[in-house]
Length: 270
Image (cartoon, rainbow, N blue to C red; front, side):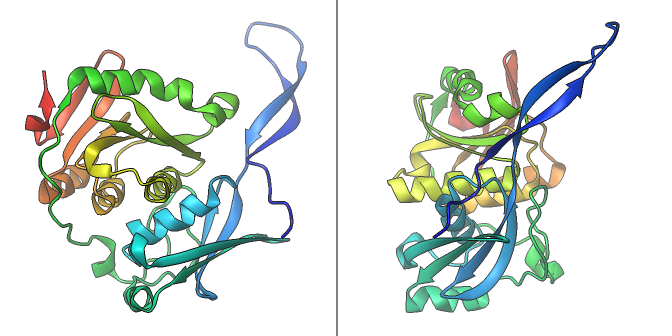
């Protein structure tokens, strides 16, 4: 296997500052993205544009959040570096292969800005969600503590200022896992895959995302089993309706000066 691409590449540039004459030569670290071809038992399924880090987590998380197979039905993941990008083959059990055969089809690459690229049928775009587990209660202070930790934990984000992040925090607000990517959907899939691979229970804590909260982010989090989702930016109206459908507590506009709870506020203790 060839060495894969690095998630950050440094480039030379010329920079000027408003009100200051002349230019300055700088070296700027930039987030990279590469095609990631996802296969199941050697059969191509989709090509994702993603940051080339935590690629195994991405493959596992995509498999789970797309409802292709369960964690128990994944028997292995192999990664090959090609001239064109990274090729990731997810091996499934016989039961998993049945689920893959029923998965919604993709007809084009999945771009880093899009969570539904290439879905070919309208009915496959917005799918029903199952009810989430009850029992989790989180104090406001736990959410605030996790938000305080979030930015400092984003190593690639601080370096490039061009990365989204998704993190898992336990009920006390301690951030246990964080993943980054140029694509917000990829970052969440990496978190979901990382949680599955490390044995973290989504129902025992909550997910944080640094992006806006569109409905497919709610869908991915719900399928993974997160009863509480915290988003830095605003949700869409459909995201709120989908959160209501599955009983998710949706907290958005989560900033240093406060948060807004849109659904199931009883999970948030003063």
